[in-house]
Image (cartoon, rainbow, N blue to C red; front, top):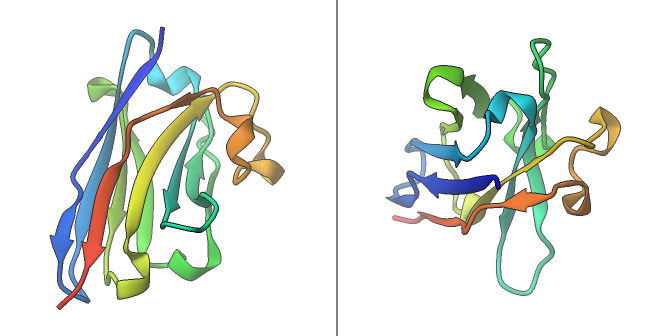
Length: 127
């Protein structure tokens, strides 16, 4: 059974950086497509980024974070990280990682495509 645990959230000033980690247990995470989503109260969960399974490592980013966030794998640690730079107040949300094996690239941001979810980590960007 795949279990995902996010870490690295916190409070940061605008323009600051955070690195979120999604660590898997029970399975080899590189065998899964991994997505990062975020959610604020009253809104639907929004796809932020994804990295495909296998060695090709197709990556996608939501338009508003393009150029500021970077997703990557650390297979030795069975982890996917999301490096977030130049954070803005509108990036404030609970961030979730998710994993699945049936995620197609053109639908990477559809939450229902993912089978496993972490518990989420809060990111707050405020001065």
